[in-house]
Image 1 (cartoon, one colour):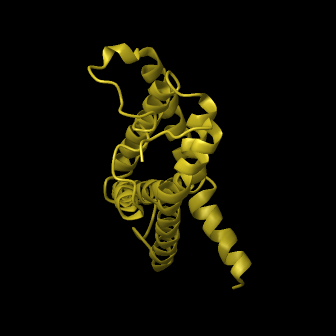
Image 2 (tube, helix red, strand yellow; image 1 turned 180 degrees about the vertical axis):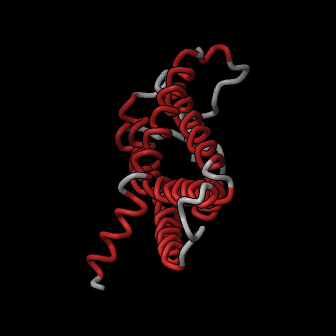
Length: 201
């Protein structure tokens, strides 16, 4: 079997259906979170953020810290494999709500272009990685339901496990690359867009 046909099979089995479903859940949750965040006036918070980027960078800005945080989120998405997809959906909803709420709050005090610059450089790698992992949780969840209903002869095949393992490995590498970009590049890009420093140095 050629590499091209193998890749096409992986795309058909894991990506074509499940990534769009995961993206829809994440996107809808982000919109709901944005609506909630936009509706909350900043004056209602007891203390204002120390800097404009605090909402995006609440923890130490190191590749290791960011990667560890996002790898935990990735593992949560994978738990859908043993919970018929429930934990995966919960993780998508929670992440979407948090992302949307943070953006909704941020645009009240930061130019939307700066907000985009704080999200896009690493987000274009990080979010697809999480969606791929969510797809694994959703597909395993669906296969479990089909097996319990007698629609599948095997719960998981060797091919399923092998392909899922490769996808998890690829997603983990993407998470590490995104963490490096977030720790070393994202803030610099945002400050260039803003024309000034966003955090004290």
